[in-house]
Image (tube, rainbow, N blue to C red; front, side, top):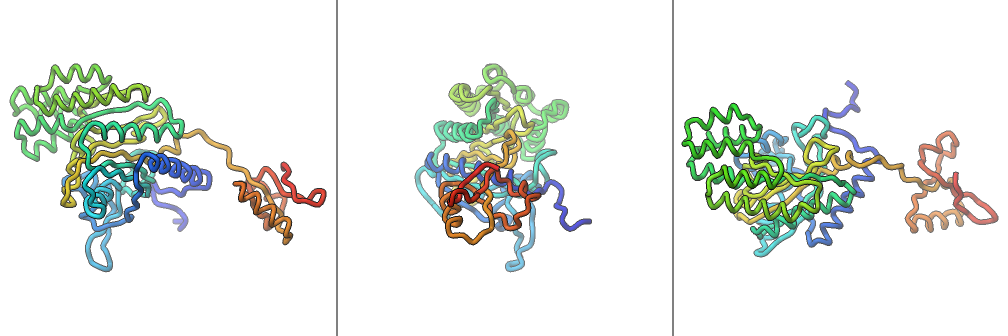
Length: 385
């Protein structure tokens, strides 16, 4: 096998993609800075127990692990930056009030999350710690939508869910962990036949509610209306449905459509409240997602109310229309003081000036220049090629 080949679902970023992704990252981080978010940059690898969330089998399967040659302990390459940011909030910053943090960096997955996705994502996101109200849920979702609008990604569909509904049903029924895990898996896959078999031993009220949960997805107003009729009137469920109504009403003017899926339990093992995902017609997978995870800090000894979102810049890049490669100015390789001065002036003005070391006409296209510096009337001038 050729030694220049890369592993499956691992790719180089060539100049056009690399420059554009870097510009996207700068745009997003500037928006986050102006919105009061402070940048943190956690390490790519940590001790495995710091990165793997208790009970999250999907995170365990997605994470690369290796042995630390210094300590002999198991290290892990991060598959998600959110747990690292929660650790920073809990132990390094240790603030009492509301903390807004943002980040951008590579994460690695053992398996791609989609057939066309890379296993090395460039994740960017934002988190709010220390506030448990709907105001922070709304702020983080509006920030996500503004981030997408920076790229003129329109026609966004927003899906909302709330893991508190399923948690309330499980809690009131006193279901054991094994059955809870099975119910979770069948609801996620919307396997109605398997769900029917699992709920048979349960009392009629609970089994009816769980079966209804698998059907409660679609248009937000319709789903909420049916949910209030079909689900028990537990306080936790009423609060969750009210929150979904408030947020959907607030955000519906900022997206093309809003849907609700009460069986969407993505991240159930660490999410604790409202969850959300943004979709676009050009992508089958969610292009941005997040939710509330008030309990995650317990892993680090300091639980804090928290909500956040993340996106993969490499995935977003593939939704954008192709752009013409940026063009520069070709300059001859000559030791001339006037030429050096003109090149400096152009670069200070923001132009890309490429010194043509070879001077071969047949290679001009590779320099990606549409103009050149030539000596005319005793001065160096920029002229079209």
